[in-house]
Length: 83
Image (tube, one colour):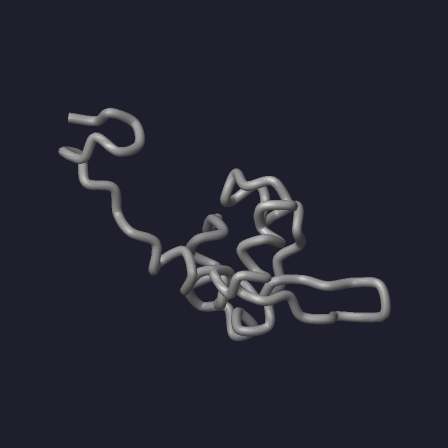
């Protein structure tokens, strides 16, 4: 049985998939308040209105944002003291 990763690679509706705030928070480990701050500052994908009482983050936009995050330099001593 294929896992979710395999299914997503061939999902014809991938461009329509939407993440909830809970999912975004779990994926980023950011609290919702920080996500809202980043969004207002233009540093995070904007939510889309799905219905009268529902908003979500387009999966493909979240993936682009994540892919654009800098990779940690293992010799860098800024965050995590990795050497």
